[in-house]
Image 1 (cartoon, each protein chain N blue to C red):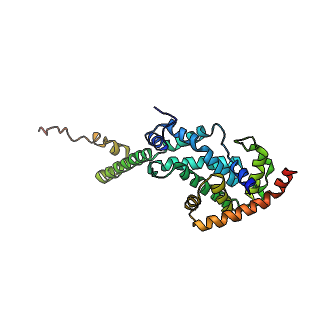
Image 2: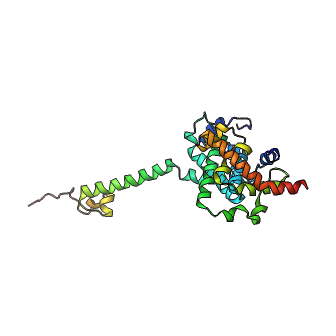
Image 3: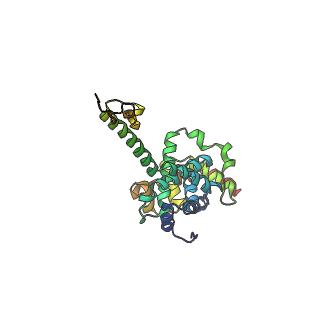
Length: 183
Length: 85
């Protein structure tokens, strides 16, 4: 019998034994983490959703070998970030993805602050991939510096320097909007 | 910087409502092509191949009759009529 309060590991065991509902529950439980990581990385909800699907399909294929000492949310975030980075490498054209206002209406918000989210998302897209991934993990997803370093497989010092550089650039990009908001 | 931190914390997103259903559908097609099914198909193909090869080696030719083991029916040597003078 499935219960919402069952742990991720219990649901994984059920999903491995063929319980589709358990797997669906895992997807529902972690979709926001994956959506937040991929949407902030690529800035387009259609692409983010494709990345999200690939993320969960990869997890489904590797479920039997999933080490239960790892946190599922961290594992899924790592896959989502890597798939996003791969996508961005393939699609280098910055101009096409950074300020594509036409696609803004497809963005589904989790709160009421739609305008600010849109502006911040566009500002995020203006950062380098390496800076953006650190800002997303550290400042949006709330991972610690150590966790971010482990997730991205980079030294802790690099996380800190990229975070500082990323936030400085973000501040610069958002300055006009924030000033405008004040007036 | 505090304002930016606040704005960043609000950058949370959700996929569409049918997202989990779509993922589940995709996993169903993976299930259909799961290793167990693939191994079963591979085993069946290998068995048929071995049958063909062994028939050819035993009979020296390949035909529907040799494969079905019915070629001997036409050259029946079991019944020998005694040669009565």
